[in-house]
Length: 161
Image (cartoon, rainbow, N blue to C red; front, side, top):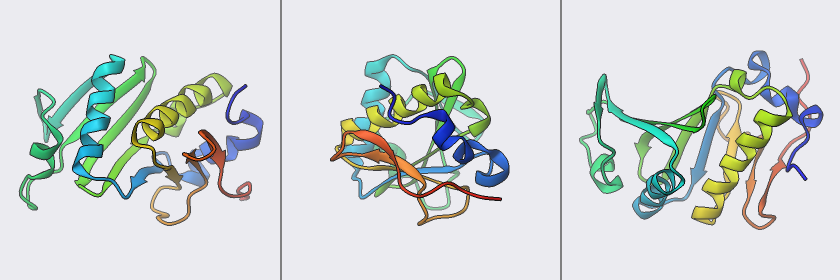
């Protein structure tokens, strides 16, 4: 059975309500947790592309990426868990895994299941919750992976216009 049913959560995938790039994060992580995410991407064989600015480079170790000077351009890692779903990790801080996904790519039950599977993979690997918040609405998660329940759950009621 799916973690979430599309009809129950489709409002959270409406770009007019959530923004097209809702914020996803795993708070309370370490450099080792970041490395575990990079290892997971490699182990699962997900297509990925690491870049610093416009320069595409091999994926470095987490401690190298996270030790860049504060004024350096923020690197990102583009990951495709499936050919039609792109997740972009941004290395803003060593204590939080920060990423986003375009909700326009997550329409319907099939894509929702892919997304929930991806959140489960990240959450299980780290043993931590993974939160999704409307774009720019930090501190107001609407859904996420609950490590204790071992599934993706709703964290709020439906949004209304």
